Image 1: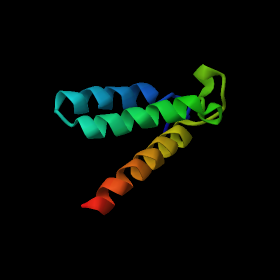
Image 2: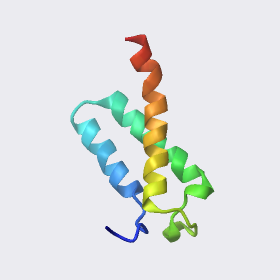
Image 3: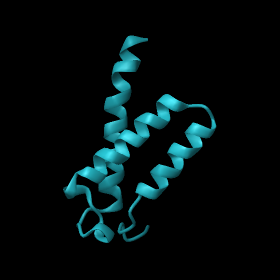
Image 4: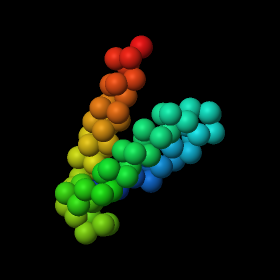
Length: 77
């Protein structure tokens, strides 16, 4: 297991590009919104951005955002 210091936002951004390439534009939009949300929240900044959040904390927050964003779509189906 790593030290939990890495900023996972670059990985999420790569996922956005992959989803767009695959034509999954709604999913790409949700992931990008999660990236924007975690980046805007200073409590979720990792050390490279002057914060103290861990990789796991940022990842969990992004995943929670995506789950919340997807919930209305799942309920409508």
